[in-house]
Every structure is written in C-alpha cells, then in structure tokens.
Length: 294
Image (cartoon, rainbow, N blue to C red; front, side):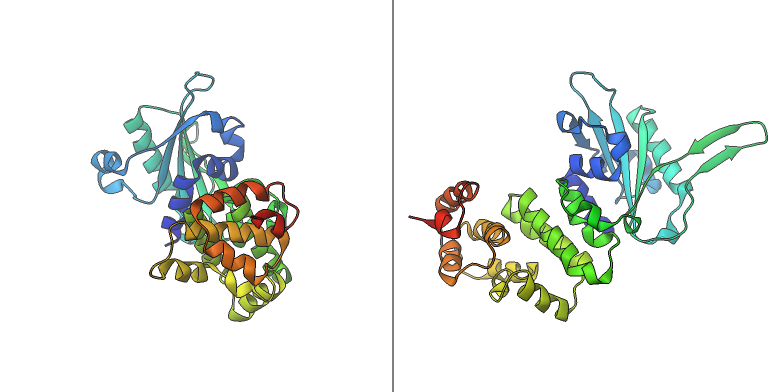
C-alpha cells in the first residue's frame, strides 16, 4: 500500500518529487527538463527476476544539452529493517546496463526511523572495487513545521509523515490540506491526495471532530475529510463538475473561513462555466459575496 502510494505520488509530481526527495542532485532547472518514467514492461523483459515493480526509475533529459541526461531510481521503504543496500546496488547496476548510462542516482525514502546501511564497499585491503551510496530522505527526521508554507506540493502532502509534537497534530494536518488546495487545481487530484493525507495522518474520531469545529467551523461536515468528498461523488444524478465545485469550495473555506449555507448550496449546484468564473474572481475578491455575485 505504502509503496504504491509513493509510486503514484512520484509519477503524478515527478519534478516536485525529485526537488524534495533529492534536492541537491535535482538542481534548479528540472521544470525545463523532460522527465520520462521508464516503462515497467521494458524492465521486466531485461531485468528478469531481479525486477522490482515498485521502484520508480525516472529518466531526466534536457533538450538544449545544458546537462547530460540522468537516471533517478526512487525507492520507498516502509520497514527500514528490510532495506538492503545490496539489492539496491544490484538493481541500479542492471538498470545502468539496460539504459546504457553510468549517470544513475539511487534515492531511498524512509517512511520510518531505524538503523540502515548507508554505504557499501566491495574490495580488499588495497582498493575498493565497487562502492554504492544513495540519496537518503528520512521523512521522520524532518520537522514538519519547516514545510508548512512550502510551495512544493510533495512536501506539503508528506507533512503527516514528518515529525511534529502531538499538540501540533491538527496544525500540521491543516497545513497539509491547505497546501493541497492551494497547489493543486485539478479536483480529481485534490480528492486523490486528500486520501493520501488522511491515510498517513490517521486522525482519531475525536481529532476529526476537533478539526471540523476548530478549522472548518460548525459547518465543517460539508468538507470534512476525503471520505465525505467521496460520498458526495457517489451520489446518483450528480451534475457534471461537482468535484470541481468541491475543490473550489475547499479553497474558499481556507480563504474566507466557514461559508454560509446559501454559498455552499450555490457552489454545489453550479455549472462548470460558473465554477471557472468564480475561480477567476476568487483571486481578487475580498469576500465570498464578491466571488459569487451575479
């Protein structure tokens, strides 16, 4: 489950993932590069039994030649104790041969704290003949408060996986949810990654109720957690664009606070064209009335 969650995250946000998980190696010009996920079918054909489906190789190329193409191999490890640097080295060597490149950067994301080997040296007394290091991203070792205002959506989505004082749990959760609606405009992805946040935050029922009241106000049940959004999406006869309306509704709540009932109903029954108009107005409007004015 965790592996697939992170694979989806990396494939949906490759630039932001590399900038966050492998900052020093990524550089500052990834947005100008072409990032190509290496096809699993190709890997299976050449790597045989050693192929591991949940590794995520990304080939980064610059059309103007400013940097030589480079291959990032991103792996998420849920249980630190099962991580094997030998397995990682073997996989990277096979991949380097397949892609005919020596420019390979292994990146390992550790979801939990724990001891793990960070360096491999094969050789004798005189020389090291094979060495392996990797870029390490230890999420639990990162203070979440440092990323509350980050413009990197991958960082904001991973706030629940970072470290934070228990008393700051809802503050962290709100920063993650706010980041999602501020940095992702696609309603479908908003719903998808609201699930990601909820899965890793794993709030208790008491915390959910507290979040609705303190962060969303008494009308918080309208937007609540992603499970509520999914239920809205399952209703029969729902008009086209309802998910877009829910996404915009979250943004309005974060900007203006709890909305009056009339505004909520107007949002949920709007056409896609109206939602587009209101999305544009929201950038300059100073009140909910200014956004929804006829």
